[in-house]
Length: 320
Image 1 (tube, helix red, strand yellow):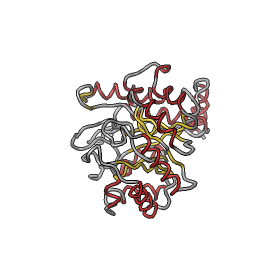
Image 2: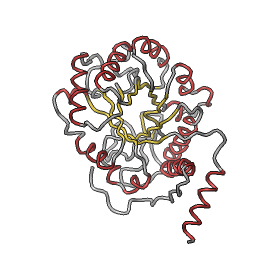
Image 3: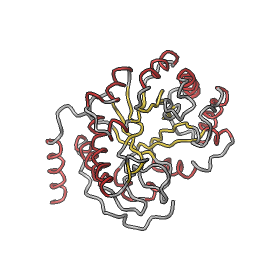
């Protein structure tokens, strides 16, 4: 009887420690690789909301080779997949699908993965590297097509970056979008610059739109460009940023989901690293921050807390 009693005491202690007014948002994970499906630590977290980017040009060609294995794993687990349409980074920033092509992309994805009911019309549409950067009206048209093709689905209307053009871009988008109910935000600036909560883009977005807000991509940056150079110190800083992401999410009950990016680092660094696990499988400090936040949410449901994770997975992971 000792273990059940101890678990109950830990749950009650966690409930007592909850900050006043903190609401219970849901936590998801976004990654393109298979690593998180192969890692027993990810399974232990109990995360059931996941996110995948798909390149529209590959779908137009009928090429699902990058996605089928990932989607099979998610479907077998019964996960809720947020499927987000995007363009390949090597494509011209001026190249966009026509509305007819976009509709074809949606139909092919629905035919391939009919169990998916959660969508985002376009990834980081207001980013300067995206073809929708100066075309919020077209972004709204894409959303309208997706809404028409997937009636009854849960759709993130505009999935935007917390950059300086966010509010004027959204003002135009709203004029042409039909009844948007969910808004997505990539809140890296809010979390990694440790802005005061009153000055965050998340709060600005909440003031600018009605409906629910999902933080569809956020996390602590370990390595990127010249500002984030990697190493142990950067990992500790990234852990603080992950904690900041949760504090930002807690500012308003309309913020209902937080998708963290990403689970494990690339075996060979390319351009970005905000992973919870190093390429060699070693857990970073941010993984423990995530565990503690999940325990806060588990305490609300009177579920036993997650114990600390091993530094490395129990079994050697296969190459992704």
